[in-house]
Image (cartoon, rainbow, N blue to C red; front, top):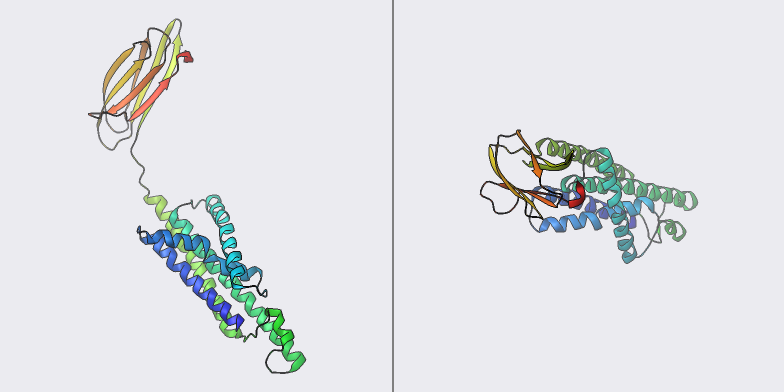
Length: 276
């Protein structure tokens, strides 16, 4: 029966959405990519399709194409909701949100399919008595007989909605916990600002350490016209080192900060020759 078939597909899609979300959350293996693709292209589609068109009968290929298109169309909307709500867009919040969408759409789709089936049975009963659906009644649901189970449908809808609510709570919890446990990477700030005091050309250099421990730096200031200055800087976490460097003439200046012993710059700033 068409209604039972569609309800079975909705149940399978909802369970697949939950499984894919769990895979995205707990693993870094290549199967995580497959789970993400299923969340993006497949699992929300049946629920969205039959929520919008519960009584339409189209071919299997057309159903797959329309369902995939609806799934893709939902992705930017989910991302927008995550950004506006403040939950943030990450792999975990996106996966859980797509699972929530799949379950909610499955619930709405199951509800609408059961209502259409019940309405069709009532029309058939009123016109022909308690007997199998006629061909005219079958057309309402696409030309196939439908056996309706109202109690079963209501329980299925309630189950879908309960899991969707649980997934919403899980998504919010994951977002809050991730935000609180996010490790802010240590960094060191380097700034170099040109200044002119009378006829004197100055470069105001500032280094602020945000590392977790005391750090040693080598600061190199080089000019395009042969200017060269080097400083050794030792800073505790949170400390700032400042120096006004006098330049003999206007020129391009490159300021490079190296961690102690490193051969590549940790931070780099340049000032063009016409900045003064």
